[in-house]
Image (cartoon, rainbow, N blue to C red; front, side, top):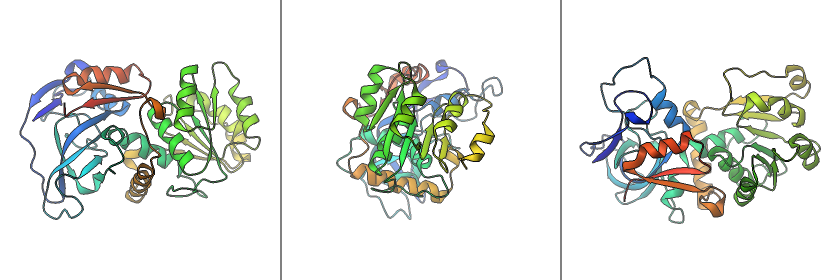
Length: 340
């Protein structure tokens, strides 16, 4: 099989195409023939992370946490999948060398999820990191739901800072599906249209509007939940506008240190939640997988221009270009076509 691998950390030049045997699924594992893989900023971070510390890996590292395809084989003790089932996968390369930038991947059964017939492989490959992060960001507070469903956020206002990134887009879609009033901020006019297509009820262009005043106008009592893409820059405004007893979920701090206006936060009884999807508890992860699966079945997690998440695609042979597109902050979702 074809795999894109790197044998040392570094820039995109370390990625190369290699040939390897198709893996044999072990007990409790599912072998997936991948059709599409998603590329996330975490893939770039993982490729670079040990540069200057490690000269060479003992084994090839295959990047890619997310993907979708068809079950090609199952190991002993696997009971929920059959050959031919359409599936999506999550956290494929977390603490492993085997990611989704290749034709086949064998994963533990719990990391493989049925993909409904009404959802494309593009949808399946766009879930994983973004949607599971977004679900946790919306459910990590003491008095809120621990698992989203239709109506779970009814009566709540959710502010998504940066609603056209992959996580922000998923947060907009999931919050709207769960019944919240969704407000989001974006950085230009094109992104305004994309955020509306994703389902946001109110979209603020922070470059041409006063975001603080607009949020106050839309929600005088303040958002109940804020999903934050750049806490380093935005926390003072977040704390100024958030409702009493509200919660701020931070999945991208935006800097090595973040200052919290602690007295103002304390007087409002604000909760903070820092999100890293890899290290959520098994119960939290499974709640997210269930909720995302239900949202997919309901048609609530679309991708593409019509759903507010433009797709930029590359063949497997151009995985380095796909990584470069993510490094350059391409708007929307970057996908790799494995099954050409």
